[in-house]
Image 1 (cartoon, rainbow, N blue to C red):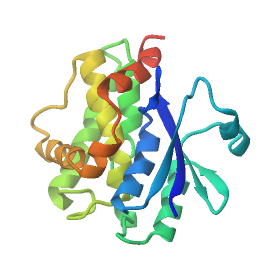
Image 2 (cartoon, rainbow, N blue to C red):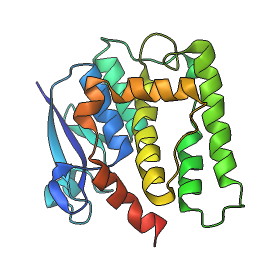
Image 3 (cartoon, rainbow, N blue to C red):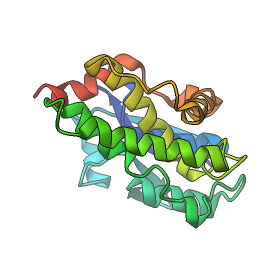
Amino acid sequence: MALEVAVKAAAGAPDVLGDCPFSQRVLLTLEEKKVQYILHLINISDKPKWFLEVNPEGKVPVVKFDDKWVSDSDVIVVILEEKFPEPPLVTPSEFASVGSKIFSTFVTFLKSKDPTDGSEQALLTELKALDEHLKEHGPYVAGEKVTAVDLSLAPKLYHLDVALAHFKKWTVPEDLTHFLNYKKLLFSRESFEKTKAEEKYVIAGWEPKVNP
């Protein structure tokens, strides 16, 4: 039986998959585990009544497990791992927090209007740390196989790529070769190709946050 999954629709295009990185993380997990699912695209600015009835907080993503809608991508991926253990995607605990500060430092740099505030340097520090980790343990965070931490990072790195190129004309330094190779590996996975938002919707999603 297919799982029901509700994720963000694209801004201005309610029938198109949206740019939420946490929604994509859940979809990536479902794709990697080959779990059948029914997709509900939720227009965030005009949420359907049925959705608010089953999920009063109105958050996405949510997945229906045994008649109960569950939110929070962290919780969802744990349940998916329990219910669908093959292929296993558990990240060894010592690697579980690798790269965990990249998204927040990216957002700070993206919104920054002051080139001297250190936000670019903070992001570079995080990217270099991941590059060093991958040099030692790669090609994925936990070695040869993709795990949950990679599926959490992949959508965030995609947002980083698209948004910084568009709003800041900024790209990742070429000397971070292990990081760039990692990104290429992630973005070329079939599951990623299938679940990523179009670049224009990623840009539209960040626009109000960058230029309020």
